[in-house]
Amino acid sequence: MGSILFLVVLAVIVLWVIAAYNGLIALKNQTVNAWKQIDVQLKRRHDLIPNLVNTVKGSMEFEKETLQGVVDARSKAMASGGGVKETAAAEGALTGALGKLFVVMERYPDLKSSQNVRDLQEELSSTENKIAFARQLYNDTATRYNTKQQQFPTNLVAGIAKAEIAELWEIEDQAERAVPQVDLSLKKPQG
Amino acid sequence: MTAGANLFEQQARNRRLTVAWLALFILFFAWLGFGGDLALYLAAAARTEGQVAYRFPWIGVVITTIAAITAWVSWRKGPQQVLWSTGARQLTAPQTFEEKQLDNVVEEMAVAAGLPKPKVYLIDDPDPNAFATGRDAATACIAVTTGLLGCVNREELQGVVAHEMGHVRNLDVRLMTLIASLVGVIVVLSNGMGRMLRGGGGFIGGRGRKASGPLLLAALVVFVLWVITLILAPFISRIMAMAVSRDREYLADATGAELTRNPAALASALQKIETHEAPTTHIKEGAAHLCIADPLGRDVNLREGRLADLLATHPPMAMRITRLKGMAFQQLKAAGQQPAT
Image (cartoon, rainbow over all chains, first blue to last red):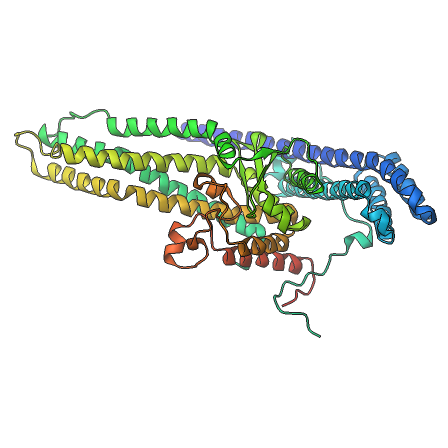
């Protein structure tokens, strides 16, 4: 009787270790995959930028500096290494440069009303969104992975699964970090 | 707990509710299937004084088999039929600016959910609405009406598509197909059995044999209860199906909020959709539970109250909007800002 009980307890423990190990490996691969998805979107943005620059170059003679800023930020981002921190910093700078260009473009009504530019702008802002959403997915997945490997009792298996804390993609740029103020009340604004 | 909870708490709560409803549904179906067998078993036991004479639960096995086959067929064929019945056309090469934007928004939400991009369909209907269908994430389709594209801005469109993406990610199509076919089988069963029993009742009583008392009484009680539930079954099963459906709507709202992190945009899209009261003529009742808003524009979905709670495919709009605003409020609070009150 005692030995049967012992065997049952042993079997339960072994099964749990297998399940916990596999769970950690699955999360690790999800994290890696989520990072790859960001890469796909970043590459698309890099590919779109020359197109945009060429389209607006002619009409924006006086904004050479802004355009050059975008081009420089792009080449810096493409040259940056694969680490989370470096990529985040370089791509953050590119996002900032693009944002500046979009603001400047507001001053050129003919440019904005051109169908070509409108399509291109939609394409770029969609890509910006995809980058943001891919980053959100990566941060969520990495957080789940990090929490799992630190929590008891899964942390006992973390060593066997060679789990390491995944770095989150933090937003460095202050302008990018600012959350827009949203008024949720149904009241009319005062004054 | 309801309106004030953040989106993850709301998701967890909705998942628990669905599990509870589904368990209840299966128990109900098992009772419908095997209750008759139980009565027959008891009656047979009463007649033969304790010896087992009724060994195989025929009624239950046959009913379960029929339900399994219908569920499988409608799961395989359902999505294409739904799309075909609404006259949706696939958006393979987006032409206009709005179409390109829709295509982009769907892709953005697929990225956010970490799922393959669903096929995009357009329905030429002036009423704003949208639905999702497909067997799983790989075969998913998202269809929106041209009326929706005309009345919402980009962020609101994103909210609506995120809600549909939520249905896809939560495997609601599979769940609702299963439930719809169970309801279908129950309705057919109830009609058929009712007719059969009226024709040849009294098969419990035994033919002229002396039966022992308590077992026969138990058989009769079980039998009567079974017949009563069978008569009420279509009504009860529909109420349960609608409860699951409403629950999944709340869950899709919360999942959509998780994808966009912008519950306020979905709330304002719902407000716009609500003001267009006209029914979506192209979407038939079969796809109602997958839409963002009830395409039939039924009054039961607008009012809050007992009857509305029981029969509507969708929760009251006002309640959904309140919950979404609750999520947005929690989000601002978490961001460390002073939320406007």
